[in-house]
Image 1: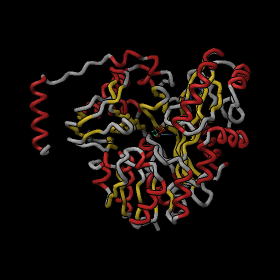
Image 2: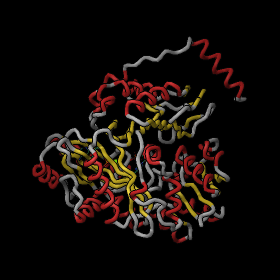
Image 3: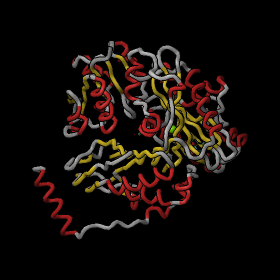
Image 4: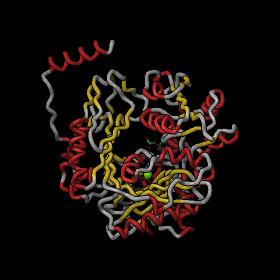
Length: 472
Ligand code: ADP
Ligand code: ADP
Ligand code: MG
């Protein structure tokens, strides 16, 4: 039985995991760096421990974190997403120290975390992959030769890449030659691996991914798909479940492919199989994320399954709480990633004090955030500051609810992507549910919104009153 969990993460996902623990009667333990002393996850967990002054390094030291888990009497660890979540070493250290790792086996993390190995495994299993490299590229000459064979445009990708980084589209041999060394050096710096591979670039693709759950008894089910085609620089901004762009047949096809992919690697715990969906209706396996994903909330809203609680039960060795036929989907959900960024200034991160925060509510509205009025949003981490998830029975209604909930959200002191999301919601493509990964690039005008602000003196008086109220 899992009795006490160390949450090896920060921000909204750490809060999310603490909430799951609280509902299951499990104690939670937070870790925090000096920069995160006043972070919400520290206040919400049952106990919390300082892991030092290095703002990022503190969350990346597997041995130290597991030492804290052992010292605090934890018998399990949840890695969240980002940081060490896809690092097989953390899973191994946990195993050696008798701490249950809430995630897949180190072997599955290794096999699927490496995009080249994952492609090979999928080819063997008969899951279609994007045409491209067999194994990693040896040099630029091999890249050029292969690109000629599959045809331009091509995508040059870091084998251990993630978070939209280490990917470059090349439209010609000249571009490929120029990009090669750059992607190799970026990959080495960001991911500690110089390995790169190449894929044909799918034209105007939709990003369709399937949430899967597997237990230790060989059962694997899917929780339907998410459409994450609204992306900026290969990073997701808005996610929708189910995809308004699939027929029921296409949905069954992609979900079955995902289950096959997960079964091939004996996958256990929660994972996501990502596909590209082309204009001819073909699905191509792209990668598998061997962890909880940022956008898991929309799947929870349409299926009613608490994915984090299910992860914990799976890690305990319990069989899945659901058979495939128990999973019913209902309505539509949209998640907006509200980032502390200025859309009008090339999405430059905007850090500083949150002078006022009011989380929206009402029917079908869920917020996952780790901010509060008076919180200093730190510059060291991801710029995502709140996730807004809305649910409604129909696509029409979820659009209206999204707009209402965004307008209902009060988030002041830093610039955010909230007004930008309102602009996305206005476009005919989004409203009609037909958009591909080129959407944001095709809509540079979305940054031309104007915000009505109270007169400067009134705003200053309000901020001062709030600060006084909180004793800041
Ligand atoms: P999701 O589909 O969950 O959004 P992302 O790939 O966008 O997945 O990653 C989620 C989080 O994890 C982001 O904060 C991202 O920056 C981080 N992340 C993902 N992969 C890596 C990686 N290989 N190295 C560092 N950070 C990563
Ligand atoms: P990450 O690990 O950073 O999430 P992915 O391999 O999942 O990297 O790719 C991120 C995004 O880049 C995809 O969602 C898609 O928009 C784009 N992309 C990746 N590969 C291709 C491809 N072969 N053709 C077209 N777009 C691609
Ligand atoms: Mg991806």
